[in-house]
Image (cartoon, rainbow, N blue to C red; front, side, top):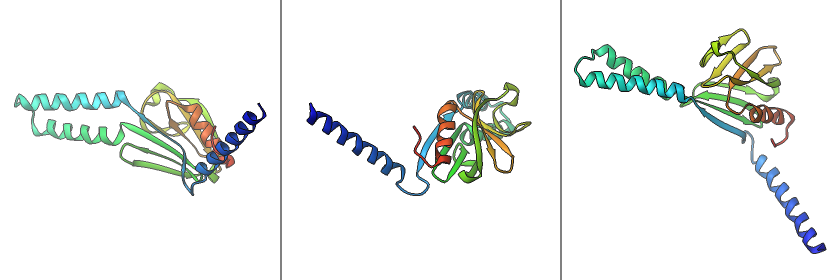
Length: 176
């Protein structure tokens, strides 16, 4: 029994050591990374593309419709997902293929709290009464307040995990 307890203690200390090593693999190693896909946005854009292609097959699509189809395809590739990364030095968010990127040093962040967006505020990049909003789907978000007093919100389908990761990174510890 004593030998088993000794092995478990050694295993636990090695596991903690590995967790700390993985967290401190180097500057800017992400402690949190999540991509949320805006399925409604994507479905709407792809539906528009299908409609344009169908109209073009019937030879009733003027060049304007084709241009709209190309625009919808590009828009869906660029804005149908939102990736949020929390590293040991910064908070970063970007849409789709890396467009509309926001980077904030952790030292500038004062707080991160879970909040809800009004459905009227919509999705995408928005200027609202509570600051900038980056969102692809849903009404849940994390509001980040900076030292300057400025605030912005990041829409996410896992606000608890994002807020915890930001707070943990601000405190300089690995997230739970």
